[in-house]
Length: 392
Image 1 (cartoon, helix red, strand yellow):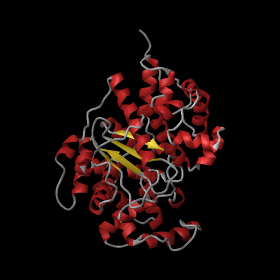
Image 2 (image 1 turned 60 degrees about the vertical axis):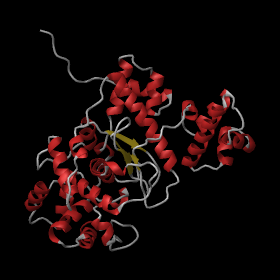
Image 3 (image 1 turned 120 degrees about the vertical axis):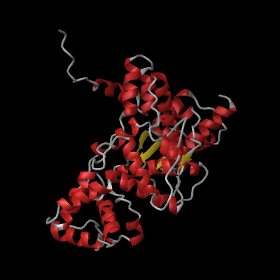
Image 4 (image 1 turned 30 degrees about the horizontal axis):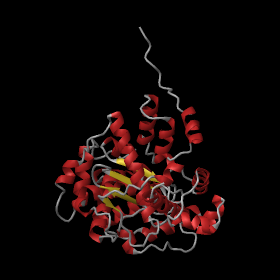
């Protein structure tokens, strides 16, 4: 190995170990190495044997190529948080790798979509309610009428030229990020960790789309601090994109006479959003803060609390007004399932590329981040049950 290759390996070892929350001692033990031997590898001071690379990859739950390939960090990325996130480097690297492979697939197959919402990004609305205005325009460009809910946010965005990437990151402080433009974007990256509610996944995808359309010039990979105004605008965009005003008013009126909790839950399911998003919109319309009322009535009606620790629910007014849905699945009543958020276009392109012999099975496994054994198992599930046209 050349010196630069040793440094790439060292960087990847450190990043992957940190992402798994392992110490050097633990990583060394899992790899069958002494602490000193592992420390030298992570410092770029020694060259590993092929067998050592395989053991390292197994211990860190990645493929050998993941240890040797230099990370691709998107330039025009928006990844901000009020909290310092130790996993930032790893998340950016994983997102960059996936998006680079995704773009290669599109190029190989000639299936790169035009960004259908570019007119909004080029000339975003101005004024106080620009988030709502952008949401209306986006829905119109995507062929949604004023009453139609967003039934498949992943499919809708991917058909419009926005890549959707699901990452499984065990963190309750990272929900998503986005890339504003080519070559890797536009793209939204959503944390689909199982403890985060699916409602939050959906809202995050729409929220990041709002940033792409409204804040193109704020995409700088080294900027980490959140901008409160931009966050409010992205929240407003997501709320009105997922729950159009006319449809919300109509459906709410049609539940007149039903218990308040049931009215909220019905609209929550209809629009595939959090109950907090529905309460937020009611607050906008009426000026009343109804979250305490909802939690009390929910407890009385179902005999259980939405928060396992305190009652009433400890949600601050600022958090409520932000429009964010419940972050954790345990906080979301009548929650959606994983099947309500499926980013499947990348998998579809991999299958097509393999079947057309444009990539190997091993390359497909690498793109999807699967061991070759798992990739072979996946291909066995690929069946086409759609009836073929009968020949006359």
